[in-house]
Image 1 (cartoon, one colour):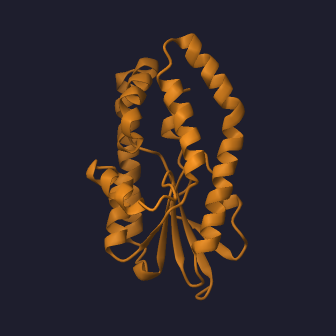
Image 2 (spheres, helix red, strand yellow):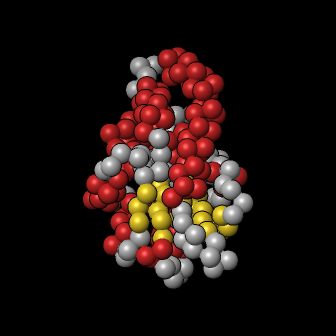
Image 3 (cartoon, one colour):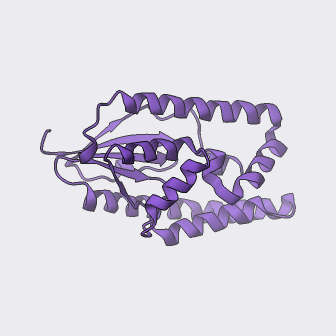
Length: 211
């Protein structure tokens, strides 16, 4: 499939660094629910995941000038590079990998609808900052009703973005959270392969902290 289009699908979990201003509340919520010991196991597992992803990508021998990078949570905004650099400076393993790929010649592509991302962020923020367990439970129930449709809209937008920007002969790298199902939506002319199998976690980092 030399002249075709290829996409390497990379299922991920987000780190604290990726959560920005929500990180302290997210950590507090996790420890409050599951304890310090499980928090350490959780962060260790995520660190090991990213170490494995980095090693696997290095073995691919990618044609960097033909590589397009698509990133979960990266809005189409005109400041995509700045966002990646900022999070790389915060030592996000995801964004350090992406930054390294860009330096080798890969092209970064704004991946998500900023309006949908803002809606997702606002829900998570409200849940994490809920004043009591009753309020948090109510918000979780409300979020549970809208979350599937919101996720579907995000996936459809990402699918369209990949379809429109991945050229013939190009190789895409999609870093995407475990709850997403973009791979099931892509057109048949895009050959999808998986860097790693879907990880043995049922939910992404941000959702786990609010459940």
